[in-house]
Length: 200
Image (tube, rainbow, N blue to C red; front, side, top):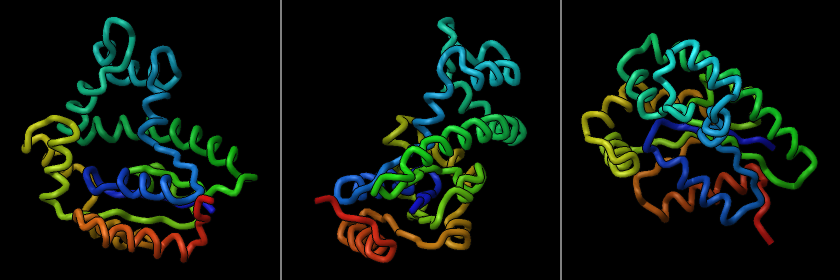
């Protein structure tokens, strides 16, 4: 089985994936890590990004300046759309390869992707779990994680889908409002429902 885990920034997708990885036989495919790998110096993806956004989007070593790119896209919806159109095709292709590698194993494949639906990765999934959280908590987590100010974190969140989007689109919802017992209970319930094997 292939399960997608999605949600907006700071919702706590990593927390849920960590729980699953610790207790169950799962293979986590992290879309952000795939994107970082694809954006190394000299890759087809990086070359296309330079063509679209100019040479100053990479540093003197030819490595992508991710912070600069983030500033550009969160302040300009057209640039964000242009980046996403470029990024999605590369990520989807790479994740398809990684999923195929796990077909003959007893692992449940988890695709951890904030833009799961936008990237059409949901088409690779049997089920999709949405992680949602209170907005203020999300902003606090983004500020702490990315070492940015409140206003920048809020702007990032405003550029993403709302909790209602995930409630409507996903098969299951886990609320992550820092109640660890409630989260563990939700994870266990979903694992039983979808027959995710526990580790020996």
